[in-house]
Image (cartoon, rainbow, N blue to C red; front, side, top):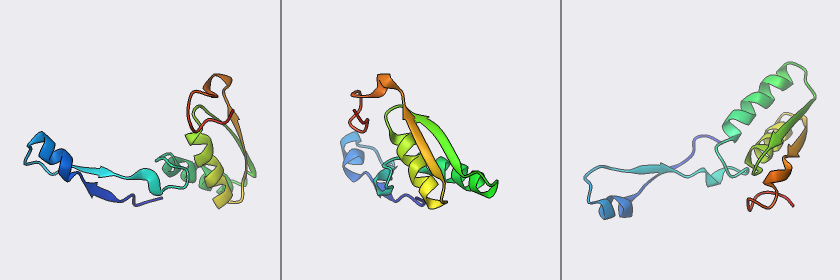
Length: 96
């Protein structure tokens, strides 16, 4: 999911009246919708290299679970994601 594209925030610069150049990263290009894939890919890779076939993880709002599921798929790992009960209904990404 790297490199994430950088965009210049021209209107924010103008609104602030600053001579500084302000940039932001757009993480929406990631299929999981967050930067968490950067960490999950490394974890899946090292687990696959170690001969691990299955991974279990937990997620709150769902971003980490989606990221780990994506990374596991990339390396042929079975991934089981558990969501804490209190997180359901709290986030638009959380499954009911």
